[in-house]
Length: 441
Image (cartoon, rainbow, N blue to C red; front, top):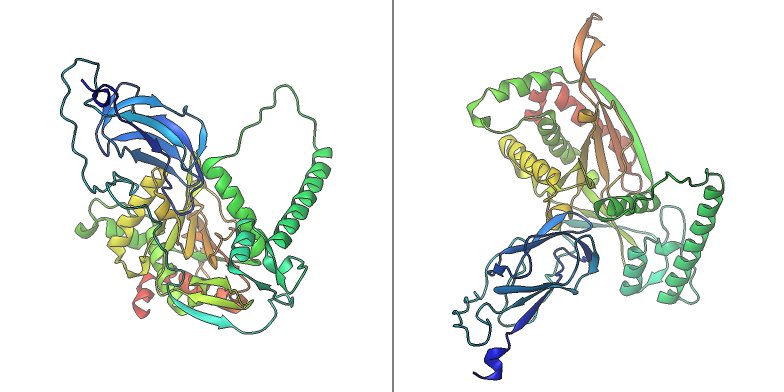
């Protein structure tokens, strides 16, 4: 027997980028142990990214030789996490089995499978999906002069959560060194502020516990901080009678067309939002800073409707692509699938990017209302309070018990003004007061 036959081929599976721009992930649960036999695309491990829990399939067939990372450890993309040896490589003198053929391409949950040829390339994502409307002028909304910035430097500033227009430049354009120096000064300021705050807080005691902030909760915190820092946000409230919407839901639940589909007020609210966005399309737009120092609005041609879902790991916001093009039944089924998947911690990263407007439902928590914070890059978010029986003054001045809720709309005040926000909010309210008005849209 030759030396090549005695020594098995050992493959190391490196942690892949399962989403656009993933840098690291936590090993949650190993599905295999050393000595187990695996086939191509067998699930070997669950990982938690900054967005969700993802199952990783094996790109190799063989026997698990080593688990290179412990459960609970966080590793960067590209790090080997498991080693697999060819299944036919047994002990010397044994009767080797035929190796399992590796298919040229087989779909997997994360798009990562065995490859026989070719280099791995990142999928190119188009940056402009809808119509771009330029906002002319050499100054931003706060009257500051817009500076010249090269695309890599602008991306660095965005990744650091910095408004590039605030960065002092040492020359005619803002350089990488300028951005890094400004970021360092900001970190120093925050550290000083944190020290001042800490000085006013009670000292740690023996029973206190420090809990690491990571995964979904860490991503949520960073997104909310970035949103409040970048976008000037305003909120409007409206309390209304939604008794007719409640009646409609009860009738639909008896219809054969909706058999097996979970119907909630969120379904009607989602449909009302999609219809109202036709009258106020700026709420479905995105603010863009161009390389030339100008600003543009990306006017999207469809609604990618996000839903804030509370999970054990933190808040996630998956979205339904092209929600405005779905029938009420299709929308109800999509919402049901999306929320179930989110609560199970199985939302894929691709389902959490590209949203254009978000709904957050506070009703299940028994809360009347709140001031929602925009998802970064979105122009609006609608919070829906609990739907409760309350005394309500009718048109004839009589008082009756009605189903009542409160809507709260937060919007990016750079993109639209109070009149536009009010128009959208009243459009949604009109449909919820009387769903028959949806036929006029």
